[in-house]
Image 1 (cartoon, rainbow, N blue to C red):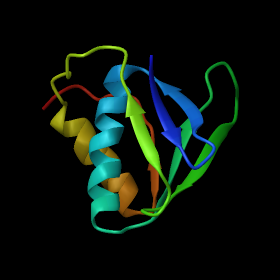
Image 2: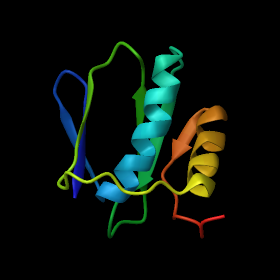
Image 3: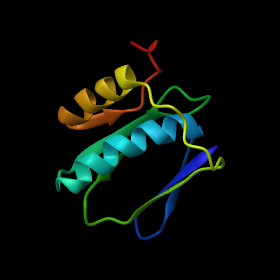
Image 4: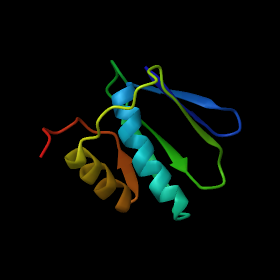
Length: 98
């Protein structure tokens, strides 16, 4: 499991390395353009979801358990980018590649 550390308190949010790699690409691209947005995900084993406000001025760190970068799924990146463009990057299931 990878971790996204967010904010001055370094709130730790766990994602599978593969998920985190895709989310990282979208987040870095949005923040590089100084765009703020929300990041939402379902909590494992719970009915609800959690949302955090992503802002370029807030410290963020990505930690991966594996040293190898996964091959990225372009269809998934398109879906995640579309969600982020609407203002809420919701972590979703990975679609089939293509």
